[in-house]
Image (tube, rainbow, N blue to C red; front, side, top):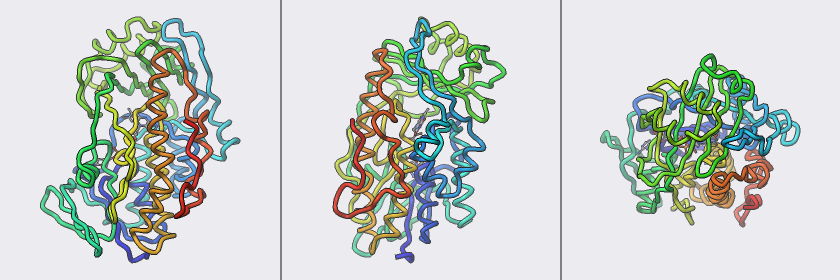
Length: 394
Ligand SMILES: Cc1cc2nc3c(=O)[nH]c(=O)nc-3n(C[C@H](O)[C@H](O)[C@H](O)COP(=O)(O)OP(=O)(O)OC[C@H]3O[C@@H](n4cnc5c(N)ncnc54)[C@H](O)[C@@H]3O)c2cc1C
């Protein structure tokens, strides 16, 4: 099986993790990315212990921990009074309970660590400027076409091309998508511009009616990551790089705790982005013969559980193990879908539920309380006969 050639569409967090996991199992991998350069946008990610097990096993955990901020414990607060509603434990607790940390990391640092490791294994394996445009498959393999006119043949193809996946659309036709009636904002602020109170208690989630605002530090507390969601009837486009207006952000959160407003005020004008949150139903099937999907392409989830990238990392790790175990590409993809779909689809639904909780001043149960961290993608059994790990209790 190691002579099998696997094509990966999309060099995001999921695609690069899958490439690295497959390379470490001895497979030849080619990654096709639409962008002209390998990079990520400026925002933070919470990487929980379940994903860190995989990153450690793939040899990039240390680099990610070095570049991250250790979590000292997220504090849930009332949007107006600042009263503490609930506290999450610190990163040390997760390390002792689950054997891996819980870290706050800049997306670009995670992406850089993954791409450096993939390119160190095979400097020629990432093909930039290759926007996937279509595919056909038969018993001999998969043929894919790209917008630049290139064509390739592979034994299997994995769509890792994000929430607006063209691979998903080609294989399953377009999946219905609905606007959730929520607009999101994100920004990074340098820590020297921050109000003292925000600096002191740097990990907070303010929960208000129809709105919430999360901030946490990145890069050893040099930056503050801000993400906020608010109900709004008006349509906003889907995308992570649409410029936002600070005045619009302030207006939507005008009755929030005063320190939160000060935090919004120090966002530099070109550092604020917004997007409309859309929702998709879990897919009943991810795989069609030699083609499958992972990450947001397979299970695009709302951001309320902070598990989208975590699930993509887990998928990538398990995919490599399935190819190592299987006798054929089709069998590997069936093993992979059996191993991953119940858990990732359940997380997709729970994320939606958590979004509803948070908008009613209810801190909800969070990813740990539903058992998501009790999972290690490097050791979870892989079996052709059905579920390999219990899905979270959603
Ligand atoms: C502000 C924000 C905060 C978040 N916070 C968290 C968090 O704390 N924890 C967490 O776990 N998750 C978080 N997420 C979710 C997480 O970022 C995503 O779930 C994750 O990036 C999914 O990885 P992916 O590889 O599937 O997709 P992506 O990272 O989106 O990568 C897809 C890649 O495919 C490429 N591509 C797209 N179309 C094509 C094509 N046609 N041909 C070739 N290439 C293509 C894209 O250019 C991109 O490089 C957050 C998301 C946002 C926006």
